[in-house]
Image (tube, rainbow, N blue to C red; front, side, top):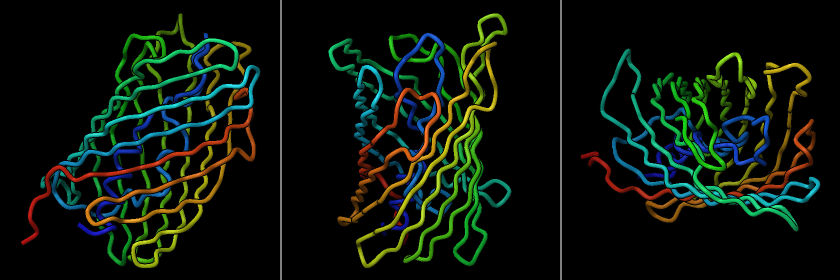
Length: 275
């Protein structure tokens, strides 16, 4: 499988990774972590197969007290042979494990909500692709999981000609909570990528923005964020790896600016022969 297909599969899965921000009584933040789909040609064709994607991640937030967040998840992604209305159908299942440490304070670890989704991807020709995804987060118990369901439609476009890659991915989240205990806002995330590839090496820049679009209760302060940084990737045979470094250029009511390091590694478990 070439770099094009591997990166696209990685992106479909990483698009589900959750918001591992500081837990609060108001549960306010995007349920999906902004920026997790950057770097990936999400809406390009992929070979039929089953793939495991491992994603370690660490960030520091300059809040009071200072907070360090670590996370890891095994994403299982399946690209099916099913075609509906000329779109290729794929599916993803992703449990998420989180570790949150406050300097001089509490250390919390446990499972976050599990992400599930199904995606339709169209080949538009001339190296352009577009897609729609119906997805969401399952209601779970635990110290770090959200105690409600979240519906999360996604849409985007990808341009990839083997050397130049551009992807824009738009996410909208709708937490499902009763009116008498509404604590989480609806939100939107936009992830952007522009890279150039030289043989197996990929270099470029990424950016992402997020914002709350509703106020779940009176007096709630909407959160927003914009971050950017470099990305470097390399393909090792069937295995592909990426490293992303980002920092907040602007944030509102997140408690402090975030600096993040993330690695993405994908391993094909089974691929249908192209012969």
